[in-house]
Image 1 (cartoon, one colour):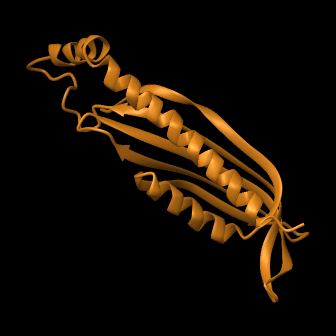
Image 2 (spheres, rainbow, N blue to C red; image 1 turned 120 degrees about the horizontal axis):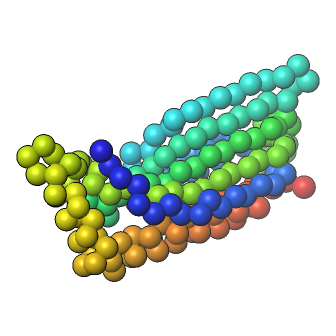
Length: 171
């Protein structure tokens, strides 16, 4: 079974905005792929509409980036929004957008031994212990680079999301 080693601190963006949530979700997929994260998986998604016409949208995704045959970076994205549909005019055309509060949380972790090569086996339980010793003593620099890469990717995604939300704002 794969092992979680380093968990990156969760970063949060929370603000009131007017944007097209469907276009934003497509943009989010695009920037994740540009950072070479694949195997994006939606673990949960919910949308509900209340009597006053407001809409609650939330989802939780993970995406993985292979660093080596032993290590993957896993990105976790949580999105929630409480919005109302509004009609806006952009480039002389009326469009439907959503106005409300959005919250995006990004975090992640390092997944080691994702192919279960070093798990405890009946015939040689010492393998896992040897791999842990190797990781801590000899492979320390590579693991530190993976940790730094994960934190850097999260920061870059946060900055790109902030820029997108500001660009899409309609005041």
